[in-house]
Every structure is written in C-alpha cells, then in structure tokens.
Image (cartoon, rainbow, N blue to C red; front, side):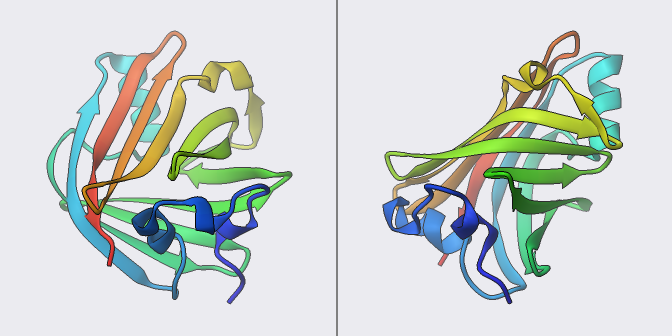
Length: 174
C-alpha cells in the first residue's frame, strides 16, 4: 500500500490538521465512516444534466456512508447516500489533487486553514477535454472538526448553469 493520497500533496502536513480530519485521510484500505448528510440541488435542465454526467447524489437528507479504498497511487471513495452510490477516484499529479467523478475530472488546490482542509477547484476535464479553470472558481469543499466530530461542506456553482449542488454533514471518525 502506498502512502495516503492527501499525505502526498505538497505543503500538506497531517500534523497541522484537526485530529478527526487527519484520521479520515489515513489508515488501512477499506475504511468506512457513517454519518448524516443534507443534499441540495439547483434548478434547471443544465444543472440536472451536469449532475447526471457526474453521477452526483439525489437531493434530500439522510444517512451517508463513505468507504475509502487504496488503489496504489490513488484512492477510490465510494459514498452511499441512502440507496444511491457516488464513486470518485482521487490522486495527486503536478501538485494538485485530481478527482474523477463520472465523466468529469476536477483539479483542486488543497490548503490547511486553522486545522481544516479547504478544497478549491482550479481546472477540469470532461471526457478528457480541458475546460476553462475559471469556470470552476465556485467549486470547492471544506473539511473541519466541530465539537470533536468530522464535518464536510461540498459546494458547486457554475457559470450559465448556476447553483449545481451543495452537500454537507458529518461523519463518525474514530
């Protein structure tokens, strides 16, 4: 097993992360976490099309389970939102975190801010075709600890499409 993906990001030191954020990103393959999530969707046909292309989760509130599997130089994250599954593959390349979700691969700059991980999209490809990085300026995420519990907040707004998706919640990370 290679080192966890997040430990290979330049400038990211696990010791500076909140303890539960650090625990989520290290450990054996097949680790699982459970919690609660609230998923919101934007309206419109373009937003629906984008969610379909990326296989994003349905709107609603309920249980979430995440399984993280080591795949050598990458990690496979399988998120189960009720009965719906969303899978992505994450790896590090050229100092960025890459995440392939459905037909889209996003590139993120990851920063540590007060013990939290802040994700900011700086580029994307759809079916291998590069898309303008500035179009993804309002795509990102934040992972942090609150009252000893791991919390996440993922958001995406795109030009022309508008508000696409936001999902946020918590996981038990022990």
